[in-house]
View: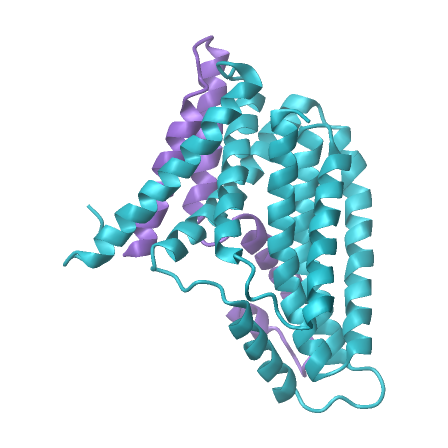
Length: 250
Length: 79
């Protein structure tokens, strides 16, 4: 497996695992508090919708010339990656609350109970919340699989990495029947933000006509470089938060 | 979203409010919390294409832009 392929597999695995953990929390909450039958029907409907989206977009992406594809994919990955990284840096520096699956589970369960009792028939609440949760988290997974996979001409590897991540999260969820609060979700999001941003920089610049010194090996500098910058920004924000001029870094 | 809610009549959404909600959802999905990042990425890619088109090395533009955009965005968020 080449360096870019390994980067692709790790990025897709981590991103998909994070999204799957969040979707699992939602499905567990409505399944336990309301109706497993309709929560799982919502999951199945969302998976079917995602399959249609991927089947429609995958071949379309393959038909786009590689340089045009890399500019578009690079731009999207950069916008996505920088948003992930921004949130991750804010969380790591203490300026934004860390995501807590146990708290998210309690909030989702309370909302499900407050929505009223489920009747014997169709439970629209359980179906809709599970459907929306899986569809929205799944769209990010599909986006990452398609963009990474098509840029590397290896959608198969991206799909395998995504499948392994989702299967691992589902297996863990079935085993403990509780939200996966011990998964280091915030650290994983930080790592995904670094990878998406690094690959976005690489493909975006290449697609726009730039030549990287060293070719693909430039990624071996870009990934640790972006990581170091992000860690430096965390320290900067922490120091700024502790100084008298809180929240106003110079 | 207030505009979208304003179009809900008798508990049923109009086609316009659905479109507004869909457009808002796409915007949130792609652009996220800070539109300056999306704008900055587009400008940096354009600059890369221009410099590369002129025959000069252009690989450095995106890394510099990413550091600047992330720092700027975090600085705004921390205020």
